[in-house]
Image (cartoon, rainbow, N blue to C red; front, side, top):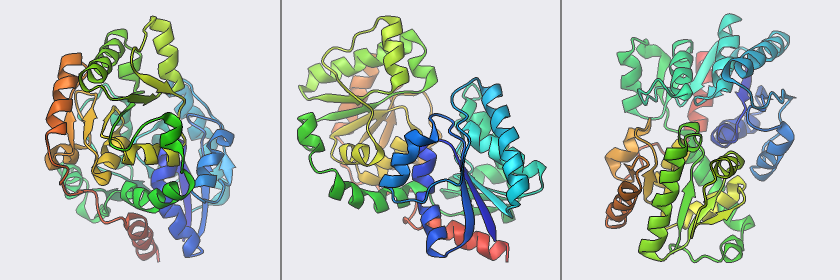
Length: 360
């Protein structure tokens, strides 16, 4: 079996690390293709180094652009590499333009496609990620779903059951495997930021629909200011460059919120694991907080991770300031005793074993 692993964003590197490690462990014939969708490959090298992963064989450095230009560039370059390498199967993970381009390039070359984290749906077609998820699922040969719920969604869309495998979510693998590395290497982070474990709130907000709309971004900032005032605890916000740019563009000021530079993955994992509560618009953070037993508030009107709502680790707040504060109070009055619905931390091994069995 020759395997191509196509990724292009930091969340994809994190979630695919257990698959890559299993390929290394079994000495499989595989290669990594990095599109550089959000950053240059050189900026992502620290992720590979920190997670002790082999470097990508190919890096396209496509960078940011409109959806059509970005996807088109990746499709063109990926196709050439796949024609040269001739893998038997291509693995993609998630819902980015990299995922769609990788799946389309492979499918048109009659190369098998495996989609990791298949079957997620927000049912909000205004989100580009939703389009990418649906199209990728419907051109994939192996659909690796995180839960039975996502399997049922795919069956409801008439995808044959023999293509669907419930493997769990590789984010569980990543958290379990990397939290120990984080604790060993990141020793002084909390003291450097001047916070005490379980005595601070952590924020991530970077989605286009939130930060590119003045009213929504302003509402989120006001909600965070209410939290800081109500609880008298630090609100730590490692701010994405895009969000910082939009704050400046809209002339918004974040009062009583501690804005810090973006963190590497291991540092963020450490900060996340010791937070009192996390507020986010990230899908991956909704999952990670669930696994870490840290309460989560989602600053969106919908989520493709409904399992987190069902087990009680997460609540949808939208972006209205008073609603955000109300949701924080609700989550802080709950016991953090939910059960992780995303699997046992063996997803990477399961995926590789399934592919080896299917392609032998």
